Length: 265
View 1 (cartoon, rainbow, N blue to C red):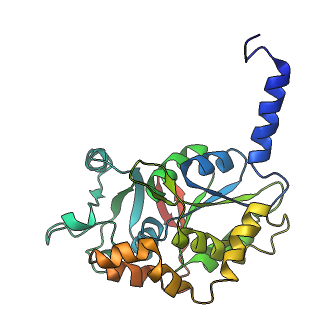
View 2 (cartoon, rainbow, N blue to C red):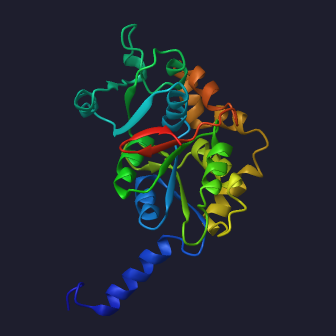
View 3 (cartoon, helix red, strand yellow):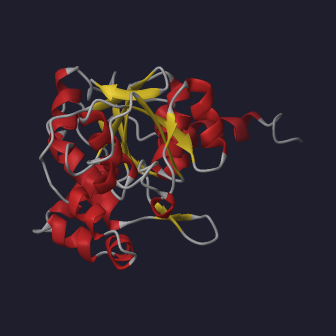
């Protein structure tokens, strides 16, 4: 009997899909592109967390009046920027005096303001671009604005069983391209979940466990500075990016992805 013709197999697969979506909770948590796709099927809003550095850079850019277009990492970003009349950000080490826009939040704090910025990255930006196809609000959260994001979502009525929130930690990548869960995104997601802890639908077990990371982290900025990703950036000459990303609770800006770009809620 073929796989598709076995009703028992089909029912089991359907049940597994339902379980993976963490049903019965107002706020849910998962990792990476696959986790975002799973939660995006069932949630009414999606929060993407990529502290070092996509969502931090989005918060900085949007707070300065720019509209940020997410795009998967690759050379096609420049062509896409030309099509939509935007400036394409480049890699941190490829900036010039004439083209200072990059994934570096520190550099973007002083770069000239442009109306539209295409901001590619292999993790948070790729997840956001894919999630935009769901049609639900996609919010960029980081340590700087996690509390504001949680407050806005609750004010909008999200967090019930009928309108659940999916919080996605973007994670980093191993050299083979596989997902590497990382400290900074778990803590960023935990800060968002902390602001959502009282939502009517409650937290899924996965969300509650992600939130528990805060209880054992009395100094979140120090943890991010000392983790693998923070050290990698600092030792690579971008300690300023880590400093910007570890400013906790300094922003009330809530960047929401609608019509293919992030703008203030």
